[in-house]
Length: 500
Image (tube, rainbow, N blue to C red; front, side):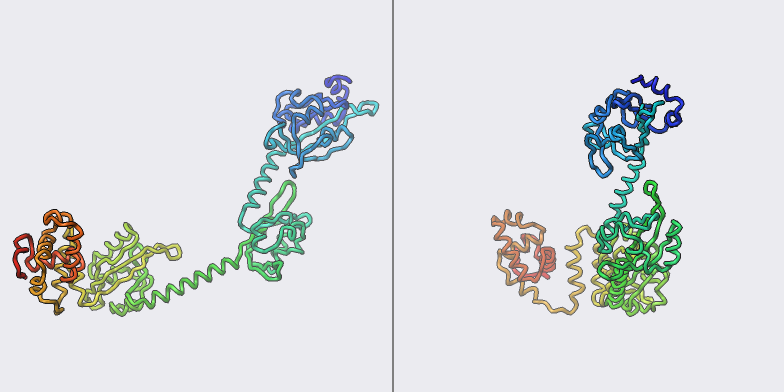
């Protein structure tokens, strides 16, 4: 056979050859009837990932040894099934699509769409086989990415081919929402699985579908395989898959949304009921400015402010607090901590009276708006002085428990009857009195045990007995009790009578 240069020259008048030479955008491979690869353009080499003609394998069998081909359904091609071999066997190829990988590669590197031509000599005998390769790698890669995204998308969707109005793709989201199986949908016509049935604007949707135009969102009722219906929002978007015009339908499950809305409504109703019937004054306010959004009946009852006096106004403008600075302090604390518990504040009655209270607050979000839910426990009159003194002592003392207990007990005791102090003190055993005196000095159990040569268990037993005899329920209160009665230090321990 003539060398390829002469073969090309001998066929220079052939219109097919001129088209091949001009078609530089496609890969072109020339194969002789004896199966030798005699020529390839640069594009053909590039879409095989090689640089020289020899790297194509030299012959049809060599090509098969160097490259692994498979169809797009992952079925590998065997001997005699490669496009080059089928064309040499006399088969005319028209857009055969194969995935191509170098031998041993884990994944295909290219996707080829292959056509074939046969050039004949003057006698009509085959002189050259021409393979025309259109590199479709990017296109099919994009389709694969779309397929993966479509299948992985949790939003229900299916694809209808506009050529014959048959469903060609359905994702898991649609199957799970409706209960259909894939075989119940794919291949079925739009009349068998009618996703526009019961659509609010069905005539418009059908018209747009026939024209291949966007179908706007609208409510529809899907017929489910079990005979039930499902309310959805459906929309259609025209797309192309390869060269095929299609309509992508997407759905939103209204049943689930309505159930969530119903649950939210029920939750809000329960909150409103609990809020309204709460025994303590409560209000819901915007976080910034404390503009009151809701106030319960207990707030009206305790402060004398009607709903119209409070709702829609800032707390400082009502005014809600006796201390004008309380509003800013409360907002600053909420921004810093996010919640408050039993903060001593005084509500302001409509008549101007201060109502000492313990205020708790939590940051909440209502329909996307940052809010504060406040609850105030208005203290009974008998607890006012105790609460105020506790707050004052806590503000100035580093260890308020010791001093506050004595002050609060003395001021809040009122007319309460207690056992005569002298009787209790006189009845103490010498060792117990001695330990009580050392406790009043501030010594701990270990120091007392070392001072008196006793075990810590013995000291602890005596202190527990002192708790029972004096009515004190903590060490600070026991110290206060002893000091009120003059039992401090070793000298007091030796004195049999109380001085308080």
